[in-house]
Image (tube, rainbow, N blue to C red; front, top):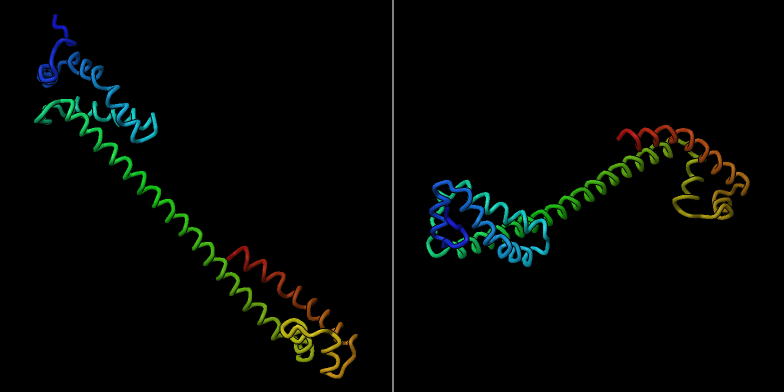
Length: 190
């Protein structure tokens, strides 16, 4: 019986190519920890490092007849590890950028949706204000749009301050009734 731990890498490789599982196990035992430490140092993640090395050894088992070792097996394994680690880091960077882009898109979409609703609501309010009786509309707009006090409005229109209060109060009551249902529909269905 052959002692696999005494064989060289090339001898083990030749045995592996012929399907020898024990040669594969010896190569795995011989190089797993060295490759794992290398991958973990670069990835800073034990599970990802282990996965990378497992993938390399799985690839060796399934494709050993196609793999051509030009220098030495350890050089091949270290190069394969570096390449897999770099691919994984590149994938993480891409995913990170994608997540940031996706978050920005969702935020932009929410802002856009909010602006559309705000514009619709503003149009509804303007329409309902325009539908108020002329005197009530004028008093209401002077109060809300021009920011005049009730006293200033009364002086400007030559009416009593109590009339101004009544017009504003009635305008608010009408708008609350008319806009209440419309605002509900706008907010929840659009």
